[in-house]
Image 1 (cartoon, protein in one colour):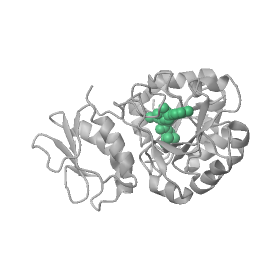
Image 2 (cartoon, protein in one colour):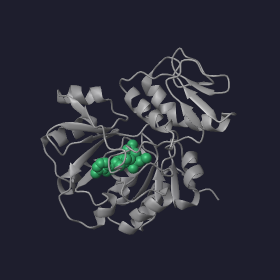
Image 3 (cartoon, protein in one colour):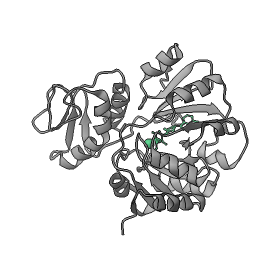
Image 4 (cartoon, protein in one colour):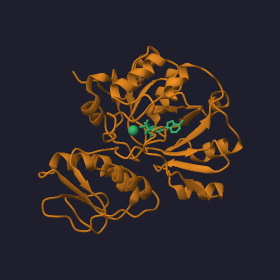
Length: 314
Ligand code: TXA
Ligand code: MG
């Protein structure tokens, strides 16, 4: 029997009960589907790592529905609240210092002294968080190092019975994960390019946002593992002309078997990216996928980051 549930009030309340009783609920956000648990329930949080087959040193994002909780949840300052007011709800995640020693949070934070938080811009996610009455910790609802899910069916295909309920909210509009910025220091450091453009943050703060070069050997830095978002087939990037035996994902004027955005719109391309990688995986007859060059601006940073990792060969 399928564990995909249509989103109606009854099912959202039912999902909140699952969260409160220590179960796992997959739910839509504007970026990708998340695999949620009660942040204060260490046993429930540990089930996320098991379901995803994710190492426990990779910390999770807390999802909140009310900015005020931040006062008691993490170390904040004016900059944090200004950014929250401008960009939340939305695809921007903050790394903040922890303020309590609540051991229940240790697992979600992988024992780090920092805590990661965002307010998703999706009515079902917000409803679920409010009805649960706790922050919901949620990584993308896919197996570790595989392609993030942008539909309920993707979640079911990847995680199957390991999740108690999947709330169906249709396809995710943004399609790539949130941008993660570290706000624990004086400078703002972008740890993961994502659904909020770096340029928009810089314009709002009127200061430069630094890019972290990360340490791929030390995956407490977000999504910085070299191999991530991996399709099953070989992926070649920055390809102007594909070989005859390659399944080609185009962009703009470069046509292909699929085109991320014929008009060259990077937001549209981001929204299609993961679903097209899955389709390419299904249809690439020779085990080879190629993808056209994507401009390195706006959401292009997030797209290029994902496909670079997806193309990494062990
Ligand atoms: O859009 C998103 O952010 C989605 C939806 C479900 O909200 N979530 C998501 O979570 O992408 P996840 O777990 O797949 O990616 C979160 C990344 C991880 O790579 C993790 O290493 C990093 O955030 N992270 C979490 N806490 C951190 C911390 N305290 N310091 C540094 N990196 C952290
Ligand atoms: Mg993920």
